[in-house]
Structures are given as structure tokens and as C-alpha cells.
Image 1 (cartoon, rainbow, N blue to C red):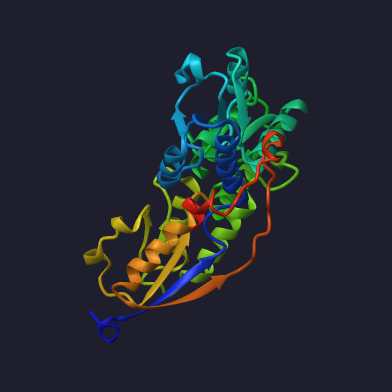
Image 2: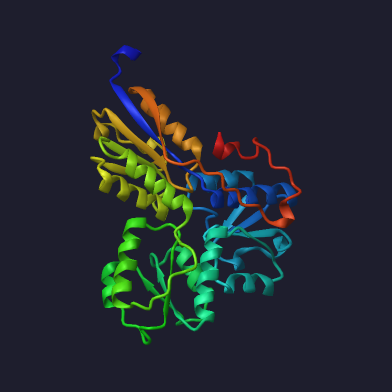
Length: 333
């Protein structure tokens, strides 16, 4: 097919998109650990919620396990990395009891939520955690405090049904990857019911989640289709799909790779929105763009709201190891 025969397409490419500083740091920790200590480096759970990233790290020598007891005795001198989502306090305690050397890749903004929850608890408040049941970040946050110290609220309906023992002594925190608008509604309802509810010292939803949702809101009106690159178990990616639909996109889908695109279902479109969740690598965004260029006379225009400059340092043990562009080319291109 020659270019003249291809239908025109405008791709609204969102910025910021893709990796946030916490995800970038977590992947760097695994890569640097492999350079410093050699393979295998064990990782408890997916380092971030993206299969492409996990497979890329496996190819470099990372071994992913669900629990620490899966690490064979002969490899217990090798490092084990905890994922960016954070872990309950019981996990590093378990690692210490097994004499394992661990590197904690918990996102600093998730660690901040842990500290906020612990501060509420220290001041005698029962902690209300707004988040999604079963998400690793929620499990990690609840695991910072004694059992029974945290109540999980997912929806406005949950907020309506919540019956705390001491309604005047509550403090809330939130999962970092929630929908900003949905969370605001839940918080407002909780404040209506419990006027003395204490907010955290700083917003719990992270800057990257907020920024990615904001630019999708601005880019979505008039889009025939909005594609979010991300994994089905990625909370922040799924929220972006919802945000695009609410903001005016006719259709929005979550895609892990270009091979998943159903061209018959996509059909004739003239404006495509494109963004990526915080754990989706840029190489897949480029892969999606090239797939559309093969079928459309595509013009890319950048829809950008802010530029992110955040950078989180890796663990002290790894800071002397050089990290090159080639080391990260498997995700950055």
C-alpha cells in the first residue's frame, strides 16, 4: 500500500506518559544488582506490573518468585529485590530470619503513604485506607500496622456503610494509583459522615498518577479511540482507560503490545489518543505508533501538560555501579 492510499490519522500522544520515577528506579535496582552481584538476582513478585518488563529482566538473569521460601539455599547469598509496590513489614522480617540480603525497591511515594498511615496510628487514630482490595500496594500498606488497625474503603457505597468504633478518631490515606476524581468523591463522603476525619500531611495519590490522568482528560475529547498501553493488573493503567472514556473519547482500550490490536474492531478512525501507564515502557508506545503508521498516514501531535523531572536515587549499595543507556535499552529503546 502506498502512502497516498492510507487514510489520514492524527495521533494525540500524551505527555507525560509511561514510566514514573518510582518504576524507573525499581527497574534500575534490578539491573544494577545484576551488574554488581551477577545472576541470579531474585525478585519477590513482579517488580512492576508489566509482563514485557518482567520478561526483559528475566532475560538478563532475574528470577521472579512469589515468596522467599522459593529461593534455593545455594542462592541465599544473592540479593532479593522487593517490588515497587511495597511489602508488609513481615516480609523484610522474614528475609532477615532467613539471612537473606535484600534490596527494597518500594517507590518512595508508597513509602510516604506507609509513614502517613503509621503517623495516624501513632497518634491514636484508626486508619482508613482508600484503595483496591488485593492490590499489592494495599497489602503492603495494611501490613505496616497491627491487624485491625486499618479499614479498607473502595467505593462511595463502602463509605456509606462504614461503621467505625470511634467515628471522631479517624485518619485516612490512599493508594497512590487511584482515579483522582473517584477518590475525591469517596473522601468527600467520608468527610460528610465523619467531620473529624484527619487527612494525611500530603496528598497520597502520586504526582505521576495525577499528571497522566490530567493529560488524558485534556486529550480525550474528540478521539475516536484512546489506547492506553499497560497491563491488565496495573491499577493506574486501568484508571486511565476510565478517565479517557469519561473525558469524551468514543472508545478506550488497554493494550499490552501492538500484536493485541484488533484492526477490524478499530475500523475507520481519524483521531487516536495514546498514553501509557506508569509501568509501561516507551518501546511499546513506539511499537504501537509504528503499527498505526503501517496502516494510516499518521501524524503525531504531542498533548503535553507538564514535564516531569523527578528522579529517585537507587539503594546506597548500588550507587557506585554505572548505569548506561545500553543497560536500559530493553525498555527505553
